[in-house]
View (cartoon, one colour):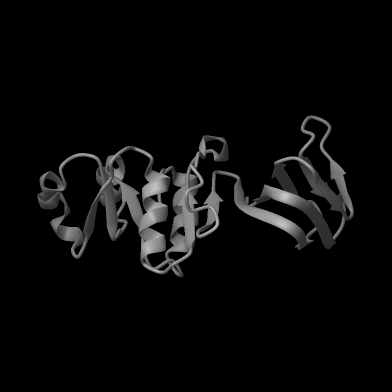
Length: 182
């Protein structure tokens, strides 16, 4: 699901297109996506889908999915779950703008790419290899982090790897982990 086509995100989008079979965009990105030459398969629209068909002839075959609101992520999650796929990758400018009603929280694995980080939800015991200098952000509470990392003084939930190696995060609730991708 693409929610922004800022230049920095288009590089990530190009990489995702190699293994993501379905690209979903909201109707407000149609002109921008076409002008940048991106192919997409599904358009979520709150307006009448028939009005958009002539604009999308060059994108055929395409599916126009009626969305009852501008809760694009909820609608994309439903579409993905209904096709039997259980991973929804989302490109957006800021993770902080992510809002999800949770209806499909257990059915859909959500991965968010913002301008700086790749975010995903973890729960339980999680191990991750970090290279020296890699930056992590954690959104959530009640977690325990073990490994060679230093905590950022300005942000209580931001860590930098001090050396190459494995870190372990343990949590009894669901938290979001962000890995720096730049």
